[in-house]
Length: 99
Image (spheres, rainbow, N blue to C red):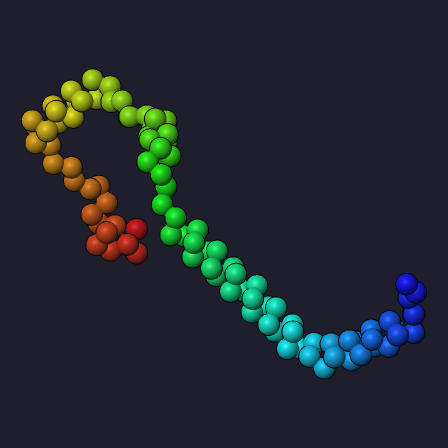
């Protein structure tokens, strides 16, 4: 079996002439395929729900906030006294340009 380089070169030139005619079309088709693949993958990933096991794993590391008993007592005391908090900045709120 012998390889004739002249026939290979002529066939390669025919192939290159074909590519030169349709290079823009091939490029556009390739770009559209890539974009459609990205859109498809983004759609798949965005609609993915976490498994129950993953949710349980994350909930194990959640720490409940702890409030000191003295703070709770103080809040209850203020609630029972019905303390009304008034702003010290009423004048500034009514007229912010007055000094």
